[in-house]
Every structure is written in structure tokens, then in C-alpha cells.
Amino acid sequence: MLFFASYREKLGIDTLELATVPTNLSALRELLSEKGLDWQEVVNDSRTLVALNQSMTRKDFEIKEGDEVAFFPPVTGG
Image: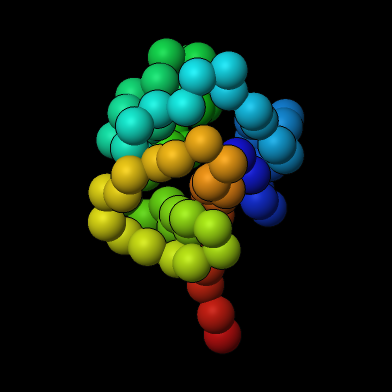
């Protein structure tokens, strides 16, 4: 798992490997939420962008061993 930009700073981590891979994004969010309030804010924010194997998605998805999941803060432009 990868965390980018302000999420990396907020959580104090840029990568995380889990011993057991959750079956889908919803289960992953639930598992990470148990790590504390900062984690809950990052993974449960409806504006959080998520990528599976470098493809952005907004849907819940199945996670398999070896998949890369990345969390990005909302992007603004100007």
C-alpha cells in the first residue's frame, strides 16, 4: 500500500505491507480505520482518491496478493 502527499505526512508513513490481504477495498478501509483517527480520516474521506495497480477507481474492488493499492488526497487545480 502506498500513501502520497499530505496523507504520507499525516500518517507518518509512505508504504505499508499487511500480513493478511483484505478481500476488497471496503475490508481494507475497515482494517486501516482500526489504526486510529488519522487513519480513519484518510481512508474514509469520500474525496480520497484510490488506485489499484496504478489505475484510479472510485468503486469497491477485490484485492489479490501482490496488488498495489494507493491512497491520494483530493487534487485541486488552478
